[in-house]
Amino acid sequence: MKTAKQPILPKWFYQLASPKWCYQITGMLLPLFASLAIALLITGFVWALLFAPQDYQQGNSFRIIYIHVPSAILAQSIYITMALSGAIGIIWKIKVADMVAYTCAPIGASMAFLALITGAVWGKPTWGSWWVWDARLTSMLILLFLYFGVMALYSAMEKPETAARSTAILSLVGLVNIPIIKYSVDWWNTLHQPATFTLTEKPAMPIEMWLPLLVMVVGFYCFFATAMIMRLRNEILTREKRTAWVKKLVTEIDR
Amino acid sequence: MQFESLVAFFEMGGHGLYVWLSFSIAVVVIGFNLIQPWLNQKKIFIALNKKYQHENRSQ
Amino acid sequence: MIRIFWAELHKDLLLAYRRKGDLLNPLLFFVMVVTLFPLGVSPAADFLSELAPGVLWVSALLAALLSLDNLFKADFEDGTLEQLMLSSESTYMIALAKALAHWLTTGLPLTIIAPLLAVMLFLPTQAIPTLVLSLLIGTPALSLIGAIASALTVGLKKGGVLISLLVIPLYIPVLIFGASAVQGATQNLPVTAYLAILGAILALSLVLAPFAIAASLRVSVSN
Image (cartoon, rainbow over all chains, first blue to last red; front, side, top):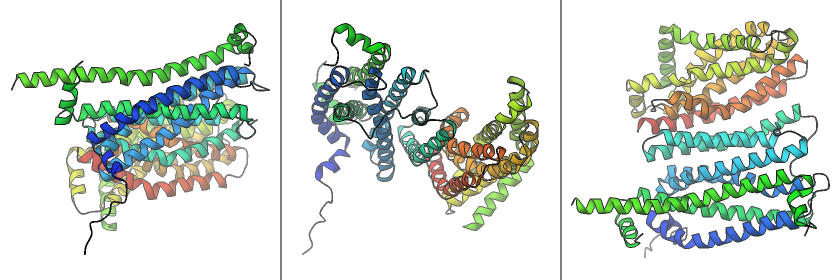
């Protein structure tokens, strides 16, 4: 007797692809991520400013690491998310994936910008100038340019469908290039910089330093989830405004 | 607590400007990314309500 | 499949040859931009010779960038592009042919004229072969990568500046290794490693870029 084909992935995965279900599921997840984000970020900030030890060489300016490293990690992770969800959207023609990619871009660009600014501000007491062509800062600057490219291409296109597909291709091309860019900038930097300054001494970090860093990184991720979900829900409402469920939802909540 | 007094906390051993500048910019960036979508949601609800009422009236 | 490659290449070269002005523009731009540096900064020989590798490479990059806007525009506007995509011909080969035509009309002339400009910038003579070699390997990669950005924006009215914005971050690795190769040659250091990496980037672009170009063309044409 022939049985129906069993779906490989859980039911909620398929539901996420539908804008209506995605709106409902994210509506339930949002309070969770929002409260986690606020709790972790406040804990992290207080810990970083008040309780974490200062660095032997850099003194209190070392505390900037608790902003710089999480934002740098997020800037890169968000780009990968943006490229992958763009790819999912273009391959399987899932509108929600397109919308996720669209909402990622400004958040990722903000993180890249934050990483750059904190890197520059950290550079002043550490190296004496507001900017150095350090390998990691230069790579982060190029990443910011890649984000701007995606956002500029999106705003230049009229139809959201073509905009989604074009930016998906662009962010995938950028994704392939990111390791190449990092390698070439790293290599260029060793050629031109005499000493190797690393803004983060990742190996020998005592637990009093990496524990608050971990809290901040997880907090930043929760912040990204919160911000992305909020933007995604707005985008779903705007694009699906002609559907019955949106009409019902909007008119029932009287503001 | 790493600091003996409130004054020492603000001064951060001479690095006060840099630390507080970085953390304030972080608060602004994070805050903007959280507040802007929240405000937008209200705007969207109002705009959509207006649009649907307009459509209902013209039917 | 190979037939369409040659047909497209032949067509593009013929069209380019008929509009000789278009062929000269990137070359003139290259020469003029290089001239700006002694005028804007300093004509001192030792200063210029130190800048020369980077200036030559950046100027070549900008000149290649300049002509990207028109890569697909003519075919897009008169409908040829749409016909080509609707036909059963391989879009991969069409993309490859177009990028090659662009290189033959832009990158290759730049490479040939580069030694002349190198002399004007007092680049040490032992570095000139490396300059030509690095441009020879690097400029096709620039054409291939640039064609992706050109294909993405072909349907837009003001695609020109946007192309530069999209493509310059992607050009940076080619620039770094190309300029470093020439720099190394001025100091008589071995440059095979840099040229090998440039070759690897070219190989990767040759294989992958036409896919991205084809996909971008499909999106732009179906708009």
